Image (cartoon, rainbow, N blue to C red):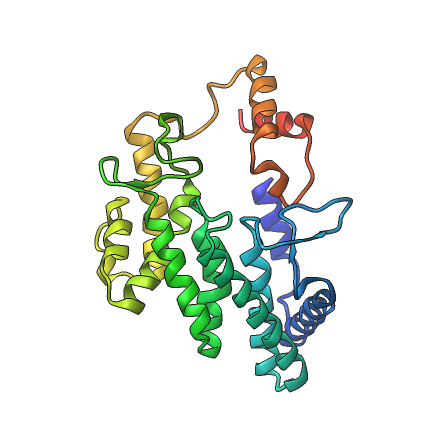
Length: 275
């Protein structure tokens, strides 16, 4: 299937600058249109009947919406569209106030998703506009993230209370949140953030770009999986396993956050394709 899609795309004409600019302008207007509902609230982690409903700043995905606001602001500024840029900047600043309040009062922050929440919202706002509130919120979020570091196992724990053995685990998202620690280390001069990220198994991080150490972190997880004998493929699966696996995946806390609605049967089919 992958090769078929690749071959199909090769036959298509290359996208033109006009088409790119048109798509960016359309995206800008989409973000602006959403501000009427999502300036003083955020999009829920999952859609309902194809629409996102407003929620307070409590989900693990709220930073992504603010990140879209800042991306739209960058495009508006690049195009010299001052009025849309001012509108978007105001919304971004309102969001940063919310993120600062959230981390100061420790509301729904005892998990591994600090990078997802604070990098696209507060770090971006600080880099783009010099927001000191954004910087403060992001540094506090980095401090919160390192409270989930296990010195013995040398990893950042995913969900759950730190003192419960059944929660002694980490997932790929723990690594994807590490750039917040690198940024905080560089911004504050405090090496504890970089050292914790280094302890996750990435070597030579001092000489790497952000993109390079992200890829290196993913490679480290893959190597760890190979070293402990986790199969790279799902060839060992049997048809009778699929019901349990699909039901477990559907019951997972992250399932409602998927961008597409799914069902147990959908998940069974997905597992089946990987056999």
